[in-house]
Image 1 (cartoon, rainbow, N blue to C red):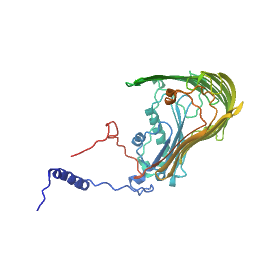
Image 2: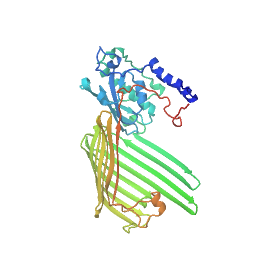
Image 3: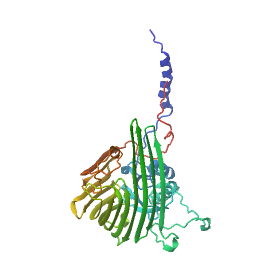
Image 4: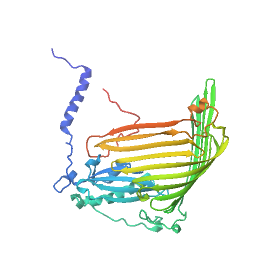
Length: 456
């Protein structure tokens, strides 16, 4: 007896027919094979394969760079690349960013490596930064593209300079010397910020406010910085018969003056004034001369640095409440040694620091803290990232004598005594599939409010 399809089956059959026939009408293209560049190759083989390794500010918008630079094949793994582009950055004295763009040739282009630089203005938007970087990337790639058949299709043009009368500032090459008379601000850069907010529900509410002002001046020989900041946090609870209000106030003024003593040495003076309910300070004042040595020249600091810093600090503290050491106020001397390593290389990046300090009057009042952060490419598409810190903490001399209240414990409103502290995280990331990374398709990329389901 022949079986007659039911209503649900009749609705599904047309869909199954469409799914079966569609691949025949529009077959999926076979994966492209990556071959060495050469005149006998097809278009994909003619293009330089580029891997972008962004370890700096402003170069993470891959969609933008793939749209703007279409004369290369973007790949997901450095092992598939002809050129490994490593971008690192550091802040300039004016508040902008100084970018190092290292073009590292691989394979047949191993002897073709170069480094270019780009400096963004202090008020540059993210769009202006990525536009400037894209221009420098194009220039750096020309030495590689010129070795391929695609070179005959590249057109190089010179943009006419805009008139100074139109209000366009003259730009200088990275690292060029600027005379003080060229700058009406005499290299000083100022930043001001203020923010606030509130929120709540039927049983609790919170208010917060913060503000800061800073002034910085940076030249080849001197670096000066001043900063004042203030923060206020208030939390209130009203649940059944329980009512409580907790407040945290922090006000700080700090400054430093640093003198360059050569390619690898620097010396300076730092100081601060602090009022903090969290740290139990009515007033804390400190000043410290500092000496620093960098194993590598400071000119290489965007890619690598190994610094050793030593300081002797004099500090005065007037406490809000008597401390666990039964002190209302005191003046103490301490010394500290900090060793820090920073690396940004094609294999990944790493940062680690070891900080140790103690008070002269009592060596038992000390701390030793180790921090590490590393991101390593282990194999094709596989990377490992590990972050951890830990140390012995025996110098929290400002902890209040009175026990912390429940609110202070839960809301972290008071510094607490401890013998140690630690944290650790580890993660792996693995990508696999097509080596090409050229296509940009932002459709349904966000803002849809959640997944979309289809049914029958």
